[in-house]
Length: 121
Image (cartoon, rainbow, N blue to C red; front, side, top):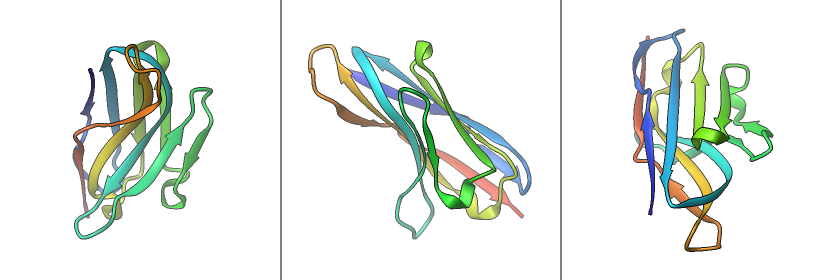
């Protein structure tokens, strides 16, 4: 019914930049909040950033001033611009979308499959 496709991960040196993208497709009626999570080896998954339908954003303290979340409602896409990357940012990044499908008038969570971000020192 709904599929989230992530792209943009890769290997960069400390201080470099990457932009992650997540495109939602399928029988979508409306999209509410969108966000990015990450999970490093041996660590629990943590919330990185969120953005509401109206554009209100929130970030975990460790990425404030370096990461920017944005969305394109016409394309059902959420982005995460990551600047001044640090080795501590190394993790698998997952996008999350809260939406309603055409056949189910109830908000549900959908997850991307994850994309690897590796920052070398």
